[in-house]
Image (cartoon, rainbow, N blue to C red; front, side):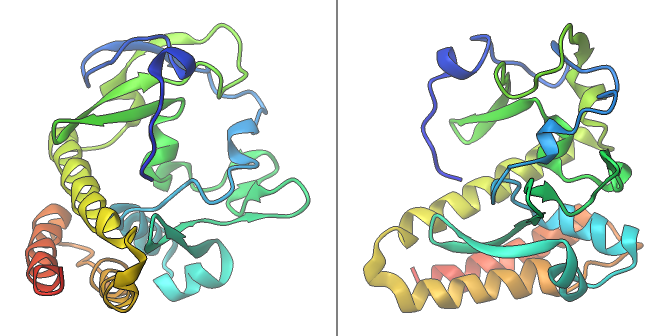
Length: 222
């Protein structure tokens, strides 16, 4: 989401790299599920998140939409996010106060309570000091905390996906482009979410092939 933040208000005032240590480890949650409740539409899912979920749960994207994922407009572009359910607005994957998809959890969940601060076509991590109520957190290397293979490729993918969407979202905020933005949103959903990625292939290679095609499509509209 496009938003301005004051790091001095939400963080410890530091920016971290993948090999830095940060006090982010809540030591196993111990029954706390605070970060899995009341998140609204904020846990936005990128193509890798959906790829993990569809193959890990043996479900299609359409089946996920029936059960645990929903679509919402994010700064003018339609994107999927985790669905919150029930009186407590809990994540649809939270069962008995435990995450039922921990190995498949989305990128936003993997880095929490860290966030990403984007600048200069890149990003660094920051520690959200007000979001997790767990006391006495331990220091952990960020590379280990986010628990993602090929982390350098992953970070570059996050950068490229973020700035591709950011350029489109800035265009979408001009509401005179309504018809074109609807076409772009439908294309993005088909290109990156509805059309399955090759389960045994190289996700990043396939993603960049799709991204190149998507840029060609959107460049003709913008």
